[in-house]
Structure formats: structure tokens, C-alpha cells
Image 1: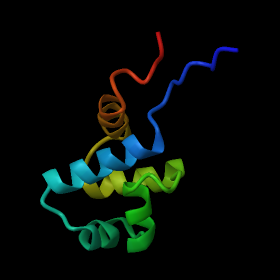
Image 2: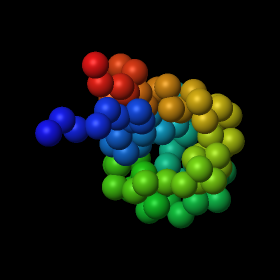
Image 3: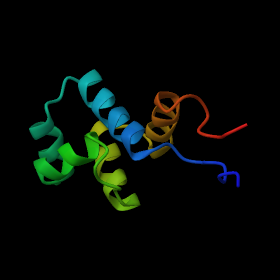
Length: 87
């Protein structure tokens, strides 16, 4: 049986994209945590791919990073090996 195609980046790639964007902006985790009103350990878990953040949480992170959610998604897909689609 063939697995269904993926249309979204993995949590690991999403977390790596958050981390990369945070670092590009010269922010520490505690600074992004404060700017997004998220607990630092929760943000750390997102960056490590251990959490599956909601749209609201992604919106808060993106607002703090001053990027669109689509930009974060695109960065995650690139880190996940391309478009995020099989085939």
C-alpha cells in the first residue's frame, strides 16, 4: 500500500525554519518567547519538532519574527526537501 502524498512540511522542518528565521533576525529564544508571548520551553519544543503548533501559535511566532505564515511554510518545505509533495 502506498502512503498518501504529504502536502505540508514535517514538524521537524517547521521547527528548523522557526529557528533559522529567529537566528537570521539575531534573536535568542527567550527574546522570541517574550515577543510572541509563548513559554520558552514550548517554543524550544516547537524548534525541536516536538510540538505541533496551532495556526494561532504560528501567527504569534510569525508576527514576532515579522514574516508571513506563508514565508515560514515555504522555508519549512525547503528544509523538508523541496515542495513538501511526493512525486
